Image 1 (cartoon, rainbow, N blue to C red):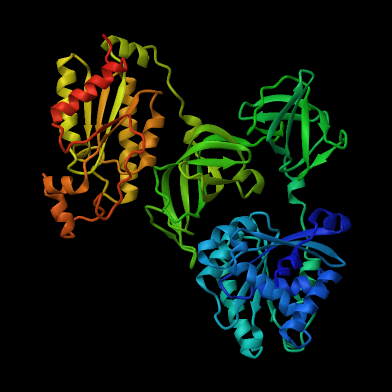
Image 2: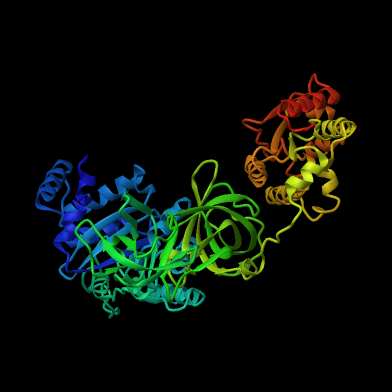
Length: 635
């Protein structure tokens, strides 16, 4: 059955063009594992007559080979094909199915029900007008049912079909249907307001209440699924919102033409309209709306166009062109809801890339206010977010961006978080609002700058970052180095891990989240000392590469020197000067680096010191020579 995948493959563009005058409904099927999503989609595709004649002939040939009997031969094979795709991992990413009826055309996002693929469900829901939430009538409402309904509603899906499936396996019992419906409606009271819920009892396998009423459920008088899908109103919300267009490309083929290309996220635009580009807030008017098919008199949400301006306005990729009288907001600090989609937990204080529209910036999750329990939607205290958990966070960016709250405009209020090392998408976020302090806090200009302070000390500022296992010799070498630099009349200060935990970081423990926050605070202190012109010696285990990279990025180029005190675990444990390894082995200390908490060694440090056969004084002398060779110690 190698051709089975072809049953749902069409020339999408040609297919949609043939049905150009019909309205389009985008919907997603979701729910827990084995609730019947593949069977339902197979039924919809089959009953909509999407299967072409040549494909039907191939199906019939397969049915003869398999000896299949019955009226549902073709349908059974189609469902088998969908199931085979799942087994082969084809739907690990969102699979979009296209079909049409006499009244409407449809795009359905087909996503797995497995918990580890919740990210795929969120991807499909982000553009859906409607969600079909399947529930196995035998099992009732499960955690994944609640999670999917919460995510769909959070992402702006305002219409939900509660498809209580497999009614044939519970003898079409009305009481079971009513109980599940009532349980869900009680849960849904805590979801976002304005959600329209239509419950339908069905059997996707038997076809009950799919395309028409079923004699097996005479007690149900509502619409069939297809009747509801064909008649549910499809809004044109994005066209009624204020104009927004993220700039994807600055088009300048010659000196006489400069245009700004992108897809219109919301609103309409006409030549002569006044616009404002953000975050610069420069204003001008639109001269032309250019497309490959010629200039337009008006363009609407969803169209890809190139705009030319009446004035020379500095606008770059990632900027947002807005209606001048109703622009987006601009800020660099926010509150947002985040769905975490990575195996490694989200740790407050860690830095990620944030992509919103065509703009990518560096973002720091500065705080996790609470986690949302998807079972009862309570706010729960949390120090991190694990896979598929949702939390409310505060974000700080390295530069201002234009945005709208997600509940106001889905297209300009949603973002993704990307791991800076692996480039994997790790989170999906929804902007709530800008933090007021973002507009109230400004940099204060100072007459005596960092260069003047460094010149006064006749040295170049530097942050010497010592990293290594406990017992590797970091603090001992830093102490020896400070003595040698002090003898050379250099201005230094040592930030030692143990010493800092007596004051600045005394409230922190040793969980991964606390370690991230520990380094975030110390990095900021080291930055201030660097600005003061000091040579700062930072002696911390700092086990994670991402936080050491964060510290490096905070410093002026060339001032961060990573020094790996490379001591094997067995050697560090033999020394055990503070008796920490012994206590950790006895279970008295949890989250001990190198034993039950990871240490990520530097990949390319500026200096690497092996302390197995090197004395602290020799190690310090080696570092001094490196600094002298780089001209960092001045005259």
